[in-house]
Length: 68
Image 1 (cartoon, rainbow, N blue to C red):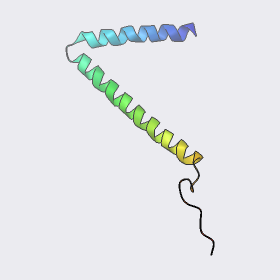
Image 2 (tube, rainbow, N blue to C red):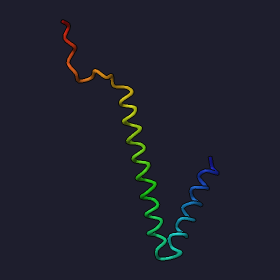
Image 3 (tube, rainbow, N blue to C red):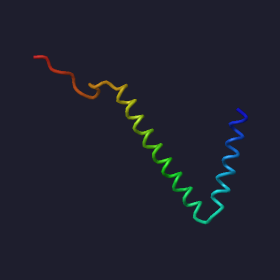
Image 4 (tube, one colour):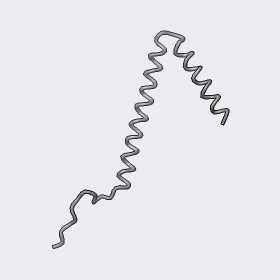
């Protein structure tokens, strides 16, 4: 567990160094973050929709069928 925490701390330092190395690097890093975060949010939205569709029955919100 301590290794994971140390890796995260090191990663933050590496990303900071990369972002400050060149003026446009911070823009590229931000765009990469937006792409990854955006696609992750879309995947979470689709997964939540699939789970709701799996749990909610087909007849939810429809009136009962009339017998003839």
